[in-house]
Length: 291
Image 1: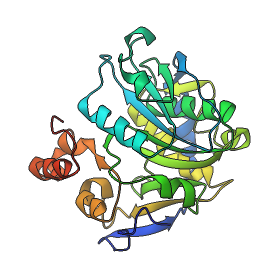
Image 2: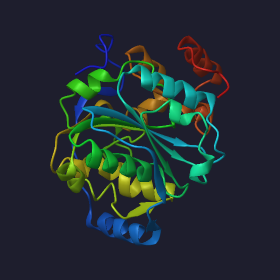
Image 3: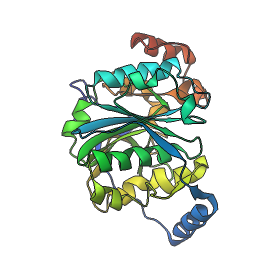
Image 4: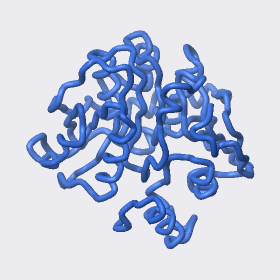
């Protein structure tokens, strides 16, 4: 499976079309997971349905964090590009209350859910997937958050032709072998699949501590999924060679037709790449440069 015809090349230090291989989990790590959950878990955030989900064969679910109730230019670019895929678009928007949702947001999306600010991206993913499971069972779902710019290429191939049930765009061995959770595709979302994934997409609880989210949800997602389904990623980076492909090899990935560029390259991880290089590539894609 490839994203585009361009994705035939190799990238130094990365493995293409990687079948997930779980790392060994030590007993002390399991105890630490339980302790972390007890410390960090809280009730899931409040939420409200603004535009209802209807049965469709596929969806794109996009999580927007808008604490000031305003869409950024990057949000608007992504919303427009996701609409261009032709898939129905479900947006989960986190802002202080449902009355402060961006006024023009409903016009971009086919379904819209508001959620409270508490809870991290996995609380939004859980809400989106469980609502799709209930009202559009069996759909393929591409999930992404607003930590990335893009997509810059068509997402249809991964939704329709990926050989895995859970597909990551990138995976890493940092901490443990895992799929990176900024974007992924989950096929045939139904009650059985969501039951298998309930140790990740908590039915009742949520986490707000970013480190707890990484430890209990992101790095465990592929391992839990692999117990009942096929799991893999388009690109895998072994930390012995490349720490994180989205930070160390972002331009090489884009050159192969990869659809995303991490927003953190111009914020907290700006030391990985010159800002001008990032802006030049964004400009080439027609992306706004006020990032």
